Length: 370
Image 1: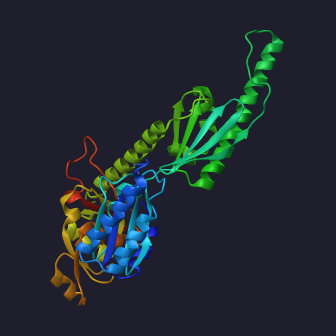
Image 2 (image 1 turned 30 degrees about the vertical axis):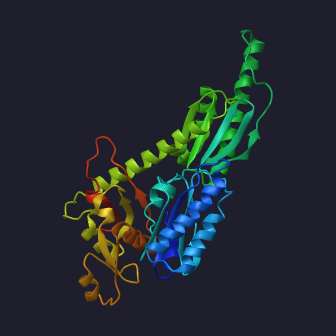
Image 3 (image 1 turned 180 degrees about the vertical axis):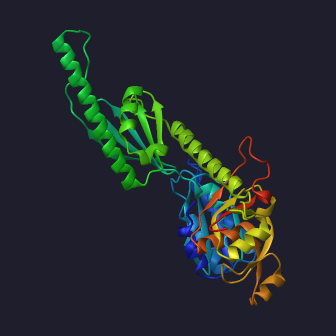
């Protein structure tokens, strides 16, 4: 997950209100329930010591969602009477929650909003293709391409004239497949899609796939079915979820390989809070890996006003010259450091066959240099 959108949260000091709410339910009772949720979240913040202006800002922002059709949920981050950031979620939180703390509670975003692969679905047939953009927030038609319209069908006879006709049919298919592939490559570049899903007969999918640029090979998924049959939301979600699992598994595998020391005894990855704190202070984190159920994610660390003012013990900050310090969760403090150095972060889960404590304690990082 690229973290640049979180920069506004670290341009001002805390404390911060962090709120996650579920907006997946939509019926006649929803507006009333969301007003009650707004009141409850503001009340929780007030009970934790949040100032009245910030509680009021959060309550007003949540009340504005009472008629929202958002399919999953929303996060809000507020301070000093202002909602600074309110990203939509790609997955619904398990429960509504609010927290008042020195740092914004951003770690849940890695699971709830982090990996949101955007799909371009191409419904392919011999005449052309229709394109559809799908994400966690819904779908949009993105046009399509029409190829040559004649000839398109083979015959069953075998005399010379018919063989010539069938050759023209093959040429038409190849021309149309090339046109679709070109248009699909342009669509991917314009939308930044993470996945290209081909829907149609096996031969038509293969013809388009073979003509796509090689740089897109890892993005292509073939869904064998007739082009007239639209993919259901569940089908698309399975494809998106599979992509998320594969990416997390690949990054975890890269991490496991990098943590082994080289011939000079240097490793390209670290794990555990003390090692990560040191890497963060030296701006060496290239990618942060967080296993949300790991015990170290909620471990207490100490922070100063700047992102690289981070320590395992409070006295260590004083040695660094920081007079003001606050306790914070390790995962949120490390994410703040990652944002400051433009490093991405990824939520990982343990795949079958992977070490059952990787990263150790649930926190790890690939390093920028050994």
